[in-house]
Length: 361
Image 1 (tube, rainbow, N blue to C red):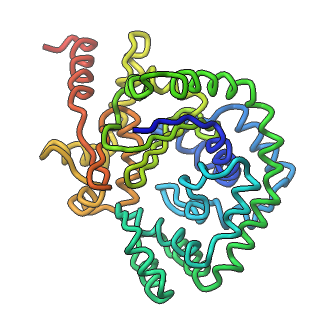
Image 2 (image 1 turned 90 degrees about the vertical axis):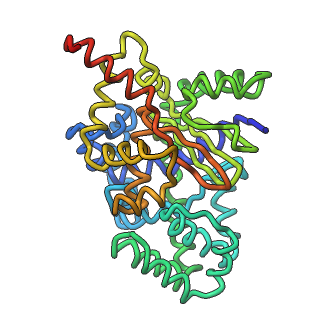
């Protein structure tokens, strides 16, 4: 098993996450105000975003076209236009943009189609390549997807005029990179310390897997992967994100990820906050139904959960982010497919906590 830490991919991802925040600040703020489990917003990011919008420093029309969320699950057109796997191949944003420019038309269409099939919990590279031989088949797949009609329309436009649409997207990203460069200085000191810590504990550690298991509370079964790539990012500062592709897993540590881990780790001073987070998840109907389903057998795939509960795969994926973050669900990977398992230990501890605090028998 290969485990590698590299800070550059996370920095590249931040270029896109900042644009996402500029386009969707109200939505993120609303989730926090409604206490729906939305991720906290770093004050520096919020102040910067407000200033960018106030001064109209970015083309709002194109920003909304590419980054405005279409659904509750936070899908946007840009989701298929930046591929997490490719971040590890480039050393800076210009190299990444150039790589996008030089992709063949077929590869660009595979980018689009991959999001359609990933939203269904499917991973089948050979099938994608076969479908991409026919624009008619790609358009049919988009039409039959779970996306909103507006997102389907935008995706179809990219298929009908692939080179032109990609060129326009790339021009927008290239013209907007200075936005992130302006912001970058505010996070250099913080990220430097975090990167040095992970460099020490992963690249310069004889047992990096022990560090990952301890740090992420064994949320993921890493033994099922051949390669583990780790990076850091600022845009999603209070979370740890996992992207799985065949036998490879990519891990993005947010700048303030330790705050989240203290909560799910159940440290004494955070026990109340930890359990409140669990109860909030239980109060959401979809998340409660997912947890109840996971009690029926050892594990379920994303597609199985969606089919049984009568919800979309995108909805399952959206709610799983919160359930995994609260350590209520663990992830296992077998035969190139992700499976979700109920973490009964977390639930049992939470039940004991409420009995203790409310003096129940």
